[in-house]
Length: 523
Image (cartoon, rainbow, N blue to C red; front, top):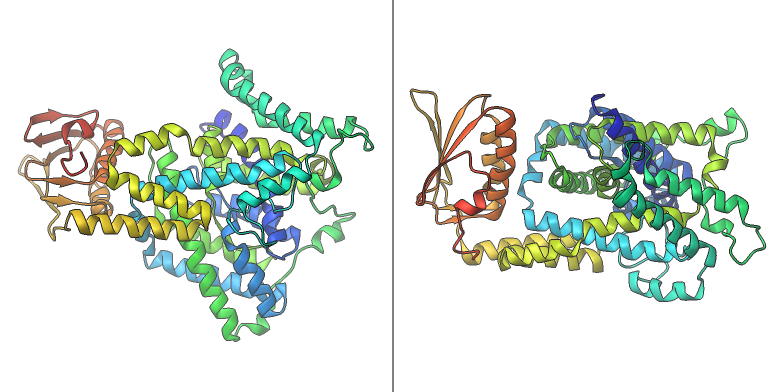
């Protein structure tokens, strides 16, 4: 875990700057104390980061739960009563992990996961534009199309024109210039620019701007456009911010309904984020989903016991971690420690950071998640990959994450029902006398089979000899091709020899499986 300190420490700083306003914004939108969002961020980083098997995933309070939390606090009568439901939700997540419910994560098609990433990228980009221009009508971190004030993502872009701040725009442009200069030029010139992250420099410049520009100037940053961390005046003030669950209401049915709701929604969002983060991982590592549910459960219990919001793994922070060069889960743990140390020691300094600096960082995160080249690539893969992809994007941008995923899944299932059937014997395997592992794929293999195939491939011992026979396979889903391509990377590291037998002949250790097997249905 400490092998890549030069990568993980700079990445943790970037994730810290992304997480700070999101923790506060989500707490505000949830109708909860601001400190509860910071608690969830700290627990998500330190506790879940330590227990999780995810190398790059970052956990914290999620915008997708904000509406649930807001309604539950009102229904249950107090925040302390709501904390009991958070603890119950955590216990249920631990049980889900023990019962191996994490296998659900393997049944999200690749096209839907990529659509989710692109959709979140677009919504992040659109939602940050008002903050970049100095208008903070919507809370930082909101991913919903419809906002609590009755506005929506696009009407907010119109409303911001009446509240443009010259100072905010200038800070955004300076921050974007620093970030792009760092990434495109300076980082290639000297090793020092790899150690000092560009976002840190952008934040420092933003703080200096706040301090140097007079408050009565037209170019000043308004107080409402700065980070707003609670500032304790004494140790007793700090510890007084912690809230504790009122377990006297544990027998109330509504508390249990809320706890079950939190467990289900948080688990689904976590599994989706796990799949998406694994797709973004350059090393194509696979996160153990059952362990992740267990870690999330422990994190939610701890967060609920000390006054924090419910936690999930969050794709915004996770993608920022990947894009910043994070390598191991140390970056997630350190980001949590940075949250804790900073609110203890420098809360007033944090409150000098303009939100437009953080908007600039998130604008680049959003753009990288939804690059135009991704749309071209998905289109070229054929309509059965492109349709679920684009429907997922539209669903996320115009509704929310879970509805968008549901629409994408529905389209994916319909395309399978219309164009293929699931063979009851999709995979045959045997080991011969020489110890060779023979894997014969059936006539039809769809994304529904990827969990089992993935498990079989990664169960192979080092220095194994694997023979994959696809001579009788007429339909091989793109998700399976991706699994084979990703496994070839692991095979090289573990000295596993792969022999593919197709109608075109025998190939040893192929570099690209898509070139071997051209799917006539997707063509």
